[in-house]
Amino acid sequence: MRELIQLRYKLLWAKTRNRNGRIALFLTGYLLLIFFIAVLAAGGFSAGMVAIKEGHAELMASVVLGGLFVNGIISAALLGFGVNTEFSGAALRRYPLTARQRFLARHLIGVLDPIWFLILALESGLAFGLYVFGTASLTVGLFAVLVLVITNYLAARAVSLLIERVARLPGGSAVLLVLVSLFSFAGVIPALGIGHQLKPLLGILRLTPPAAAARLMLAGDLASFVPACSLLLSGLMLSAAAVLVLERLPVPSKASSGPAASTSGSLDRFASLFGLSIGPLLARFLRYYLRNNRIRAMYPLAIPTVGFLLVMNAAQRGSEILTFALGAFATLSFLSTAPMAVNPFGYEASGFRRHFLLPVAPGAPLRAASYASVLLGSLLIPVALLLWAAFAPVPLTPATLFMLFASGLTGLFFFNALAIWTALYGPRKVDYNSSFGNNLSLLGNVVFIGALLLCLAGPQALSHVVKRPALLAHWWVPGLAALVAIWFYRVTLSKGAVLFVRRRELMLQIIEGWN
Image (tube, rainbow, N blue to C red):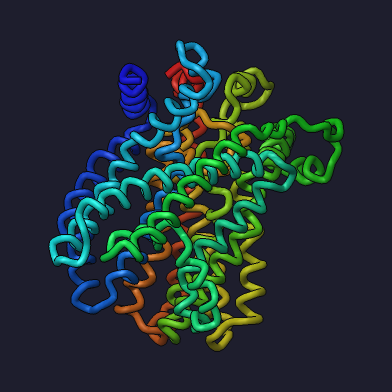
């Protein structure tokens, strides 16, 4: 077991040093270290102190433990941290272990992942804070934390197994992304003023493992200790049983018997308008986008997501909604296509070689891939403008429509120009059928997250400086920004086509998995 754990951390370090996995090194090394020190010293201890002073120790402990429990599931099941796949049952058959030993080894290695050490440290800080102020036993508190962390790992494992199986079903990826979006929006229920309607849900939440762990930490006598301990251990056993059942279920096959490929469809007729050198490649990349599970699920959710953010901002800032809408329209134009736009060739593996055997200009594949992202992103802008015209909370004028349209074009062309450089300098081999997790390279993450922050946080800062009258007086500024973005995109296409040929060998090594 010791050798397997050592091998796990060797593989973890190898992944960190390999490819563009320096994201993991940065996040787990620097940010988590700072977060570990700060929250362990202040977060858990202060949470316990504040809870005791205000007389709501159990409620505060339940909220803190519940938040960490949910974050553990999200980090492990959706982002891929803490649920390793290297030590599967098939891989461990190479070692002299029985079936039961393989099960224990696989999950012991999983729970010893660094992310669970972080959650253990944070929850231990809360237990220590409650103990210092004399309302909890340190031994019982640490026992509750240990059981809760193991339960959290098993719950994350069960959720990841469920996601893996549902995502392979027809339409499963779209259903999962809708559920994730609804879950993400649940945090703003208090701001919408409907929290009082969900009071029956609080009774159910008291039966969850985090609430049971909080009551166990604060149990002062045997009468309160036994029910809380029983409930917490029941959650542990239920999570373990769910993992056992889901691991034994067969994984649905990805193979499907669809119609034969055709080169005379509507996409081909539309793409032929771009000429013989680009048209067939453009039709191929459009199909590549439209058949991808991640894009198919995110594309219809782009407008509802941005609309939801606009509604929430309108409730908080009122007349400044126009400023935020400019950033929202810029975000809308690239939000759904970004995962593939920044890495259009990373899904092709050895098929990437075929681009250089075609009787077209060497840079044609890069242009076609970028055109596909631009075309799909541009279709959302007029739809969003129609919805804005119908439901805008501010007076509708030609100036506002022009500003929003120009803002959408700015985000569309500026981001896709940056995506071209990302495709050239930050490619990464990824699975075309993956539906969840962060599959972008380091440069892709920098471009995508940076663009989101600029488009969403920038208007918030701008609203404090520029008020709506001044914004309308300078209605031509977004149009100028759109012209600059289009110019930048055209220059990038021209330069990128040359670099595409020069860097093809390096890109091929990464995309085929050699480097």
